[in-house]
Length: 231
Image (cartoon, rainbow, N blue to C red):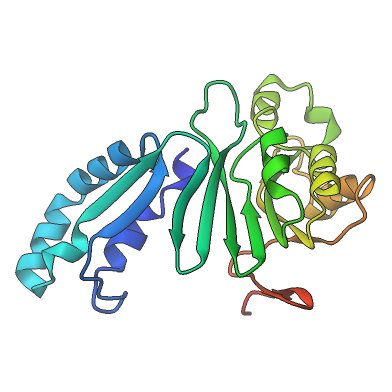
């Protein structure tokens, strides 16, 4: 889905600019089946921009090149200097494939990022005892659960009671809600994050944080430290 990849042009091209990183090597992308097609089309879309900057700003052409690798099954997709990234398939719906989550391990520490998914046993298998589990979540007011349009969206995501089951079975040192889908209509307001957390708390009592843009986390021997976003 576009909302998970629409930042790629900025990351790719801004990283090539002198003020953005001055990259001189190709932009390396590792992704599931479809990643090569996506990146090839982005290269076509921004070809004029790249050509102009090479001529006008004398930027190195190699820094705007793209090197894309694809994977099509669960397993290690990146390993270097002690960092290991494992991709695992999640369930975002019958027609929304491929969909993957990622587990990152480094020096005995671990992070799992769910990606968009409904309740997934494969996620639980890969998420046992991680330090930090970042999970997408969705919710709505009870009166919207019979709305067919809302229902289609919710059926592709994890709801609070299901997330609570995931956290209870994986036992992360810290669970974090991210990519929070709050369904609403013109007459029914969205659920608040407090209401989503309250639904989760009915069956999960462990550590839980609602994520915010620019929030960060330090994983140490003492546990997971939450760094609030700059104000």
